[in-house]
Length: 488
Image (cartoon, rainbow, N blue to C red):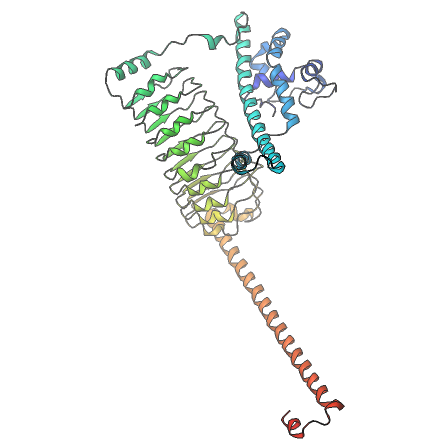
């Protein structure tokens, strides 16, 4: 909930300098202690939190800080509100709430008190997620605003808020030339507009129907227009190194798209519509701010061969990822993965799996990982894995394994040091020992069961003989027919 100093360095610093009295006036709270914004006594210099003053020394100017404080008052208020409401629900919970809400609204009676209460609960979950989403955008806008204030202070001029938004942006000459050629009927199959500091991408570009390859990487684009869907023949789209916070839903209409690179942006989520790009073979969404992947992404992207989602904040992979039958490379290092879905074992074409650097979150692997029959390289370094799955030895194709910086116990460190083949051999022998032990226990249980059956049968026969003897020896049976006694 707090602004990350790495992503919002100026905002984090300014908020930390807000005096307690000012914070109380914003929140309306009477309590002198504020968990969200600790008092000045608590503000001790820490790295890397305050190292920004070394790069931006004017932040020590009281008048500049005062101007910045007033610019982020809404952020402080929103933080306090969200702290009271609770943390953001995960993507799966929100999707489940949306689905349940649609079911209730379609089939439930409006007179049902229970149904109405459940509807309100589902709406509350969705609303909380939307509030957190809006708060994330607010942080980004606030950081941009503070950057402008600081730059204006350096230039010795007064701060004019939203100055950049009101400027008329001139179109790049190359963009104008390409659009004119398209109007004249000339076909362009490949356009490279990378590194031209473009701030806008004109809607008119959607009319360049012949375009197959479009490179817009390393610019300053914040928004991609919906008209991108007009590029019906597009097969490769390069958008890396921009300032995009979202992708338009219309991107799902690029049915011929095979390559998509949106790395190095500020994306919080990928649109669900991206699953409609069924021809996609390579997707690079690394170095963004993703916390999840679309729930159904695996069911549609069955032709995907490479998925790069490293350097994000993804906490879990959707179960549908197991349906990516063509996937050969999955790079998810430096995320916040707390595990892998059991469906990971369905990726029988997977050759390279990188899970490095999920740190304290990743503690174990599912047994189904042993079903990755074509896996050649596996990087599990910098996690908290104590033991490999018992069936790990079945990864016969595995030729490269990295287990560095894990508190590994099974297999022992000595075995790990000997290399991947030693690890596979150890785990295979361990699996065989487990099978033998299970077989021994099964035999013992069977023998005990048979012995119990014999004892119960013997006891039953003894009781039967005793009852018959007592019956024959009783006085009331002394007048029985001698011939019947003889038969008995």
